[in-house]
Image 1: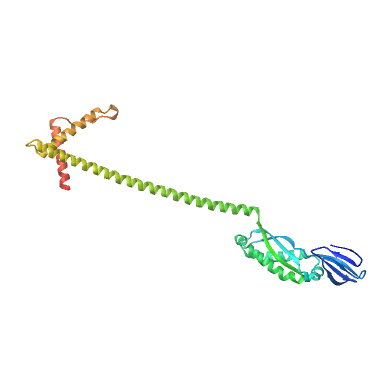
Image 2: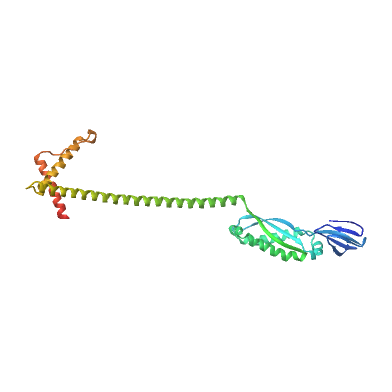
Length: 286
């Protein structure tokens, strides 16, 4: 703003006064004190030299037909050497900048899909700045920066995008859960196989220990009882185990049921012959 009386005028800091002489542009009065030829000259207008910001909101649509609201913030200032152009050539510089921003946004964003528009905000902002700089320099304005500060689709589109992301994450979670269950099943199967293998080793060692014990018993009995053959010793062992088995069966409670076997000298002899025949067949097959 300016203040003064007649020939003596003052312009505040970060402002410039446009001086006219009888209605024609004469000069620019810079900040501070200066003299004019009153009444022929007077200050007809003040131009701010500060950096200004204009927020432009523009509705447009993307390549995939999604309507979005794009907010662009433009920071600009008047070039000191072009104050007359800024004052005289444009009636409303803010409306002019807004028109250029609309033109750039509505030509750039429709070429992009929604996801690309979000990813290309810097590129769109650079295009706005370049176009504005070329156009507004003629009118004495310097475009310092242009920023796409917001790109806001409709709320229904936001909800749909959130649902898509949620569904994608649930699908990934289901895959991870299935993979974890698969690993558990595989590990359980491996553990079962190892358990059975170790159990088989234990049974094999048990049987080997029994065979070694029988062999040792037969040898010791044959040495201590003259005339006793290995067959006699085996018959005795079989009879002993048979009677032990009968004792165990008899000691079980009634709830476990009963086993009825033929009993008598002939039956025991038949059992001995059958076991002997079985061992013989096993030895031949081996």
